Amino acid sequence: MIYRDLGKTGLKVSEIGMGCEGFAEENCKMTKKLFDAAEIAGINYFDLYTSNPAVRKAVGEALRGRREKFIAQSHICSVWQNGQYKRTRKLPEVKAGFEESLELLQTNYIDVGTIHYCDALDDWENIVSGGILDYVRELKAKKIIRHVGLSSHNPQVALKAVESGAIEVLMFSVNPCYDLLPASEDVEQLWNEKNYESHLTNMDSDRKTLYETCQRLGVGITVMKCFGGGDLLNAELSPAGVALTPNQCIHYALSRPGVAVVLAGAHSVEQLNQAVAYENATAEEKDYALTFASFPKISWKGHCVYCSHCAPCVKHIDIAYVTKFLHLAESQSKIPETVREHYKLLPHHASECIKCGVCETRCPFGVEIRKNMTRAANLFGY
Image 1 (cartoon, one colour):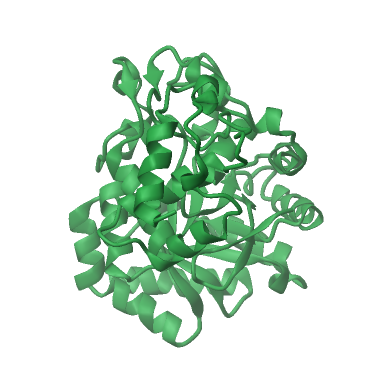
Image 2 (cartoon, one colour):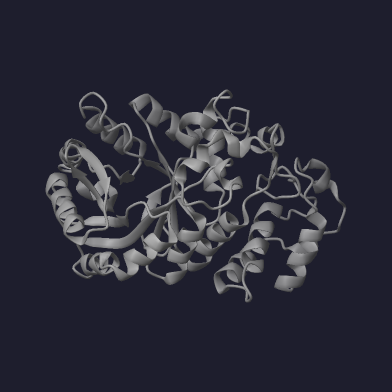
């Protein structure tokens, strides 16, 4: 298992994490089975958005004796009332729900306390001014939560939260179909088939900016909906009209700036191990570029997806990394020091490009790589 930095939190997280979708299977008996399999695989990060007390209790039982082996991302503002889930911004309900979750989980702290499901700008303003953020900060000051997170599907809202400096971890929906759609306060627009009927081209600019800003500011992204609820794995259901493999979906998400961990929503140990198999997959099995190029309704023409199909460079330049650092730098008025230092550490730089153009003949998306190398050399100075 490969471990990554979760932004600037200081946490080292497994790049494959565990969602909680399958915890309720078999009357919650699946919970312990999944945690057992996760421990064996080296998974140390899991998300718990559900407020179902039976699930939370099962997680508490599964963590008994091994709490320190797992990093818990648990949600604040997700409560259980009248036998069903509810998202609330009423502070008394929020506090009661969180205190109950600690009791059921049999723990006195949460690693990442995540403000649950914020997809509207006015909702974010309410979180800031209505006492929710103050409460979360109070929990952090008391070390009841170690880091502040937020879950969202709206890149504009997420960007505002990230730029505010209030959050350290962002849980966000990342996959090659959702990344094409403009921001919306209605999460169901992400899987509305009508939104994919017309020809879509390249990543939405708000999403691109969000990922790059998270990378720059050190806000770690934990990925939800990597498989689009399973739709992307089925040609008949996929908005792209072509089925992707779990390895391709995971690799795409892990290739985005700022991303630290993909949360696999497994309903069985077999499904969890299928996600873990990514760690031993070949480069060919992870490669998504040629499949993207075959999408009938979606075009990534001219857009670098950092797939490295352009390699090998005759001058040994890592073109994908140079391009990623170029994009990160160009998104700011001033080159971030971290980006400059990472670029500096590359063994070969854009200025070494001899403009032979061989890389462009390999690119499935027609990216003007030579122009990118010139821009990078001019921007970084070498």
